[in-house]
Amino acid sequence: QPTCLRKVLCTLPDIFALLPIGSFFALRIYDDGDYDLDMMSWVVFGIHCAVSAFSLFHLLFVPSYRFMLWELSPVPCTSRVVRYSFWLCVLAAKFALGLAVLNVMHLTIRDLQLARVGHETVSDVMELCKSTIWWSDVLVWFVLWATAFLLFFADTQLWFTLGCTFLGVLTVFKQRGWAAANIVYEDAMARLPERFSKKVLYYSQFPKKKPGKAVANFSSNFPLVWDRIVAYMRYEDDIDTGTMADLSFDVKSARDGVVFEDLQKPLYEKVAAQGETGSAGFRVKMPTAFRGKNATETCLKTYCCMADAHEPTNADVRWRLAALGRGLSLPMPRPYRGPYFPGLTVLIPHYGEQILMKKSELFEQDKRSVVPLMHWLKQKYEEEF
Image (cartoon, rainbow, N blue to C red; front, side):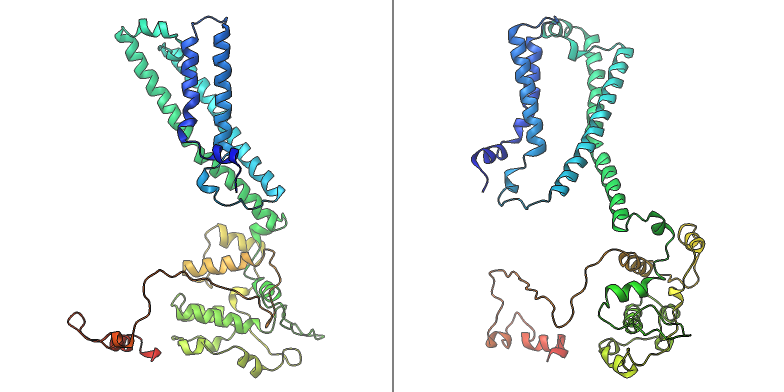
C-alpha cells in the first residue's frame, strides 16, 4: 500500500498544476519595473520557483491515485534507465524547440512594434488600457501567443512518435543481431523451411546425409505441416488453385475444393504411411515460393514494384507469409515436447444472471414463443444432437 506522503501527492487535484500561473501573477504585481528587487519581491520570486519546480515534479513523476491501487510491477534497472532516458530526450527536444519559438515570437512582436503585456507593470497596464490602440495590440499579441502555445502542446505527439520510431528501429536491429544488410536483401521465404524446422519442429528428425545425394536442410515432417497450412488458406478462399499448387509440396493435393473433413485428419497417419524419417526417406519437390533468390532479385521484387509471377495475389496472404518468414528470423525459446506441456488455467467470468434452465422451461410453449426453445435449438444446432 502507498505511504501517507505518497497518497497525499497522488490525490492532489489537477488545479495544483496551475499554481505557477498564480505565483507568476503575484510576482508581476510586486514588480515595479525596476531592476533592483526589494526583499518582498525576492520572497515572491523564490515561492514562484519552488511552486514551478513542485508542479513539474508532480506532473512528471507522481502518477494519479487511481493507478496506485496496487503495488507497481518491478522493472529491471536497464528498462528503467531506457524509459527515463527516452522521456528526457523527448522533453529536451521539446524544450529546445520551445526556446526557439519563444525567440521567434519575441523578435516578431518587436518588429511589429506591438505592446508587450508581459513586460509592462500593473501601473502601466492601468494607464495604457484607456487607449484603443493598446487594446488592438493586445488582441494581436494574444492571438500570436495563443497560436504558439497551441503548437507547443500539439507537437508533443510528434516528438513522442519520432522517439518511438527511433527506439523501434534500434529494437529491430538488436533482435536481428545488428545485421542491417540481411534485413534489407535477405530472402526470408527461401529460409522458411529450415528455420521452421529448427525452431518449431525442434524434436523432429532430419534426413540423414548420404554421399553423392542432395539432402534437404529441413525436417521430413515440414512438407506435411506446410501443405496443411496451405490447405487451410485454400479452404478460406484466400488463394486459388494455381497459387495452392505453387505453394504446396504435394502438387496433386491442389484442387478446386478443400473439404473440412480432410483438414481434420491427423498428420501422423501420413507420417506413418511414409515410413520412419530416420530410416527411409522420400523425395519432395520444392515449391516455387521457396526457390532462393539472390540479393538483386530480392531488392527488385521487394522495393522496385517488380511483379513476381509465383507470388500470391492476395495482399493478406502475402502479409502472412512475410510476417512468418521475418518472425522466424527472431530468437525464439525452445518449444515444449509432448506430453510435457505446461498447464493452462482459463478463468471465464460470469455475470450474476441465471444461465441454467429447467426442463419444463425448455419445452414450454406459450403465446410469446412460436415453438418451444428446445425445438429451435435442435433445428439450429442439429450437429450437437
